[in-house]
Amino acid sequence: MTLTTKSVARVALVSTLVAAAAGAAVLVASPASGAASTLAAAAQQSGRYFGTAVAANKLSDSTYVGILNREFDMVTAENEMKMDATEPNQGQFSYGNADRIVNQARSQGKRVRGHALAWHSQQPGWMQRMEGSALRQAMLNHVTQVASYYRGKIYAWDVVNEAFADGSSGGRRDSNLQRTGNDWIEAAFRAARAADPGAKLCYNDYNTDNWSHAKTQGVYRMVQDFKSRGVPIDCVGFQAHFNSGNPVPSNYHTTLQNFANLGVDVQITELDIEGSGSSQAEQFKGVTQACLAVARCTGITVWGIRDSDSWRASGTPLLFDRNGNKKAAYNAVLDALNAGGTTTVPTTPTDPTTDPQNPESCTATYSEGEKWSDRFNGQVTVSGTDNWVVTVTVGSPQRIIATWNTSPTWETANVMTARPNGNGNTFGFTIQHGGNWNWPSISCRVA
Ligand code: G2I
Image 1 (cartoon, rainbow, N blue to C red):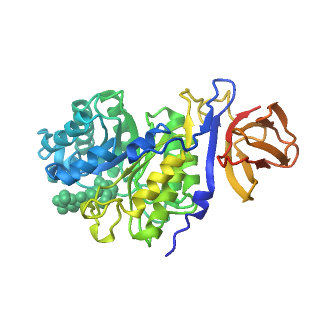
Image 2: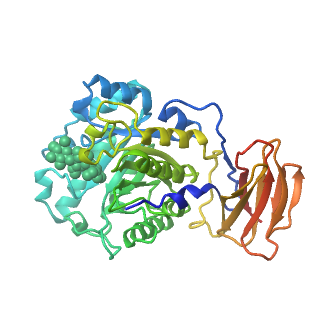
Image 3: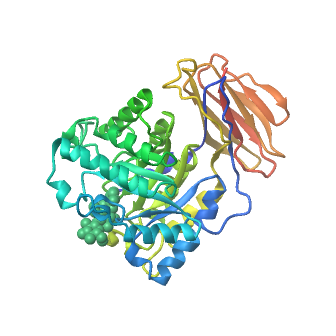
């Protein structure tokens, strides 16, 4: 099945500003400036990371470690931090392989995503046989012990992994953990926060990429509920295991943006896409661009280095071939990272879901329009409020020579302020580019 990356790629620049008075986040496009030659360096240009899953038993493979050290600045243990690995017998913790990965990463200046504290799968045998309050207690003890052991060394923990059901229910997956009571997830997040207050705490799942899927909606409602009740959640991980039966959805960017709008970071945590050649490359490019277009999409992790390292090696779903050569997909990701994305000036955003003073938010989405040799069209769509002010800044020697559906005022010749003029929340303009094809910077605020 052909993937519909086109619309992902087209919505190229998003500027989100959570409302008004309390401190405005200014988001700008970072155009390509001296291309970086590794994934990590390219991602760092917009303040993001580029990570990979690592298996402890491959740390003696020099090709593997060479690519790891060169290309990536974030590491996830593929299996070594899971419950069966870290607590094989109740109350006896085992960190040997996990430590090998954490120490290797940190010695190279890389950060670590922790995966995963609580999960229905890969439980040690003793836990699989538990139920009820004894299991709840054991799970919380596991979260506390493991998060405390690694306190200060983990950028983000997948506190809970894969707790929602596939299919149309939009509800929780049945599991021994779920049967201890619906509040098991928030209990795990609270225990993790107490154990390592400096780590970002994430909910991580798969098949949550398509905004219209019931599972996506179910996770969204949980995160919304957690934010409204002060449950300590900081991020949502999208595993992103794609193949022809489960392609990158055309609304992927919408999904990432809508979660980010709840006031959490979003991360692509286990990316792999089965396929080969330019079709695979296009899909990787679309996913990368979707992340780059969301200011709170803080990084991308691929689920392994070479195709032969993958949990589904026959689908050749990664960025390097079995010999460690860069694939077309690698170049597509690198180029997309070098083309830039939104970056965010650090700010403490006001959360519209929890702050009754600031119920409105402003999200401005830029999309490319027609192009001619001397000029191109751009369009901005605003959501979150009807009461917006959008600033459009063009780079030298560009000039905005026409507008529609807004009556602009001008700060300077290259900074235009657009407001609604009764023609809805989409406006457009023509830029005479003078050889500079970069997109304008867009920022949005509630008037
Ligand atoms: O299934 C793909 C991923 C889905 N999201 C959560 C991830 O944690 C999960 O990773 C995979 C690993 O890539 C596999 O490597 O999780 C699998 C288990 O759920 C891992 O497979 C296990 C095999 O089941 C074991 O038999 C094997 O000993 O890998 C182990 C180490 O190779």
